[in-house]
Length: 58
Image (tube, rainbow, N blue to C red; front, side, top):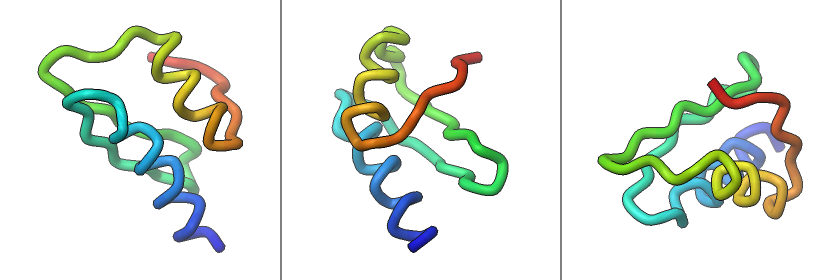
């Protein structure tokens, strides 16, 4: 189940244009890379629409 969660969040983030993501479920974070990062609202929306909660963006 844990790998499914990681894959689900990764896929949701990587559907944003130009985004690559690494998801660390144990650390409770995802690292997002892109030449031009989407705004915080787009990142939050992608994760929440996938069924997960965003607790902060750094």
